[in-house]
Structures are given as C-alpha cells and as structure tokens.
Image (tube, rainbow, N blue to C red; front, side, top):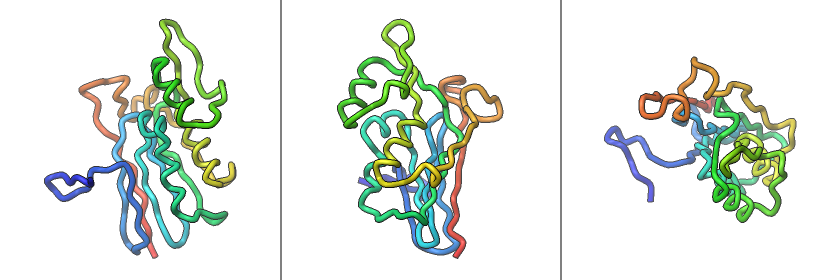
Length: 166
C-alpha cells in the first residue's frame, strides 16, 4: 500500500512518469538513487541494501527497456558493512553473486558493494554496461554528502531529482 506524508508526497521506493514537466525525487543518506530514462519515461528508485538484497530493480522488468534507455546511479556509499545473513539473503534471491561483490572482514562481517549489486540486477533486465553511468562519489568518505553510516542520527538526507522536460 502506498503511504503519503503530510504534504501528500508518496512514501515508496520507486516512481515513474511519462508526463512532461514532472520531476521525481529520491531521498537517500547512503542508499543508491537509481534513475532510468528515455524520451518517453523517467523512473526513480531508492535502492538500499534491503531493497537490493530482495531484488528491487528486478521489479522494473514489467517495463520494456531497450537500447534507448539510460541509467544513472547517483552518489551512495561504496562499501556497506553487512552480516553473513545479508550475504545469504542476497545469494538466495540471485542466481549467482560473484565473490568480488563483497569482501570478508573480521567478526563475520562483509563489505557489500551496492553499486555492483545494482548493476547485476540492471544487466539482468537487459541493460548494457554502456547504458549505465555510476557516480564515483562515496557518501561515507565525502563530507559534502550526507551519510547515515558516518553520522547516524544526525545525518541529513541527499535529494536526487530527475525531470521529464518534454
């Protein structure tokens, strides 16, 4: 069920439109803002570790993307610390998870590369590497961006927008 804030903004992980002069906004603090677009549609998806672990970008398969669609992955945390249970969940929901998508750390923890997981899902949908642009900005290490992992409860939010102009 779609929920709305007091100002009638929908609370959800993905939006799309084919209407001209409409902007879609994604709010993040370490998660990935993922935008797909072509001349007809724009899509905005909030892709956090939970969403990516459950295959949120696979839900876009009902739209017929083709070679004229592009993807932008905005600023996000580059390596996200997770436990073994998250790695197991991702392996369960994906047919194959290459080992370079996560790095073992001490205390049964891993650094998960969220952007690689997003690219895996997008490539499964048929997007080619040259259709996907990924930001190199790491919200954890760049003080100009908000990071929940770095600043916890005092972290602000990053707002990313896409606009369909015609």
